[in-house]
Image (cartoon, rainbow, N blue to C red; front, side):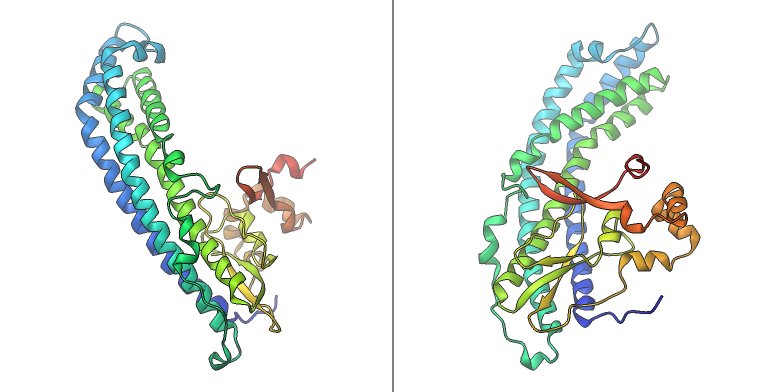
Length: 331
């Protein structure tokens, strides 16, 4: 397959994307540190409840209903609710600050890629925006709702994970210490949810700020989807290079890290080796790792790679890249 020379604007976009990756990882680390405070606050009651239920398990089955009726569980649940409320208040501030940084970097990345798209930097002239133009996004989720509304369900995820881990641990005959560790890990579902929200909203802010700069620049006619090949899902990998009009939104799924590379009026569209071509050039082992054995067999049997990717739609969240389920491919 012929080699495609990567446009300078693409190299610039990839460099900014790495900077954004570092920013969102810093937010993930801060959220993880705050969650440790929740776990430490609950350690004693988790250990006490684990010990109580392990003892009960020695004389009969321990069910979720039994645990829910236990006074120690009710005390723990009330404490968990209070601690997750404090955590979510902190998380809201951390994510909002992260959004502001992402908006700034998104604007910088768009301006940098526009400059890189010109034949000569001296000829670059366009309207520039600043973070004030997109500041209304700070503290809000992708659907326009407050982040606090989205985060409040962390308690339910944490409580469900803790309870299920407790019942399963007792049923498996684990000791009290092991059950307590499982409960803490199960409770981490609340953290997992907040990390998913954080990464999704930070990267959404980054994309939105960049595309708003493109629209307001006066020199951009549209843009192309650019994925990070080594970390992209199969759906995004195959959609790499997708063309969009300047008024369109660059859709992505939760945790998505796709970015937009601009197409300047009167200039050629940026080029690079697309994800599907990159995949075609990989070793058989790597291809199977990305595609899975069944899809790899289908591909080698004549099914085009494009058949494996599509878009899902939500009235609330809009469109998002998706991997087409195997059952839908065989119909």
